[in-house]
Image (cartoon, rainbow, N blue to C red; front, side, top):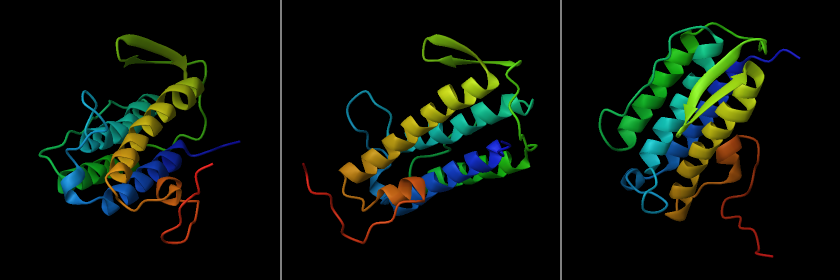
Length: 164
């Protein structure tokens, strides 16, 4: 099966943008708890993880984007820069597991074949940080649904699950 990894990553980035667009300006400095990244830093890390995954498999130098200031506008501009950069990179339709990708994971070094690098390291880390953006926004009352996260689910406005 051939899949355009870039298209998948652009879709993930789009959904992160959906969440950011719905999040009020005053929540971007908030974190889930002390010692954790803020919403805006989680958004930055999530977006850059897509480039950390795609750049080495496309054999291009890694570019990372940082927030120039705090707040929603800065995050939106960062997501747009990541999108533009990702779109400019060559299409990759197949992963080559004879190539080992390396990156740092906290205080560990990750060395994995391309497919494992993308599916076991890059995507889970992107999802973690995107989930933190979603969780911080939701804990502060932003009306988001699973559909905002994945672009697939649909729920009526005001829908709530009954606790089990």
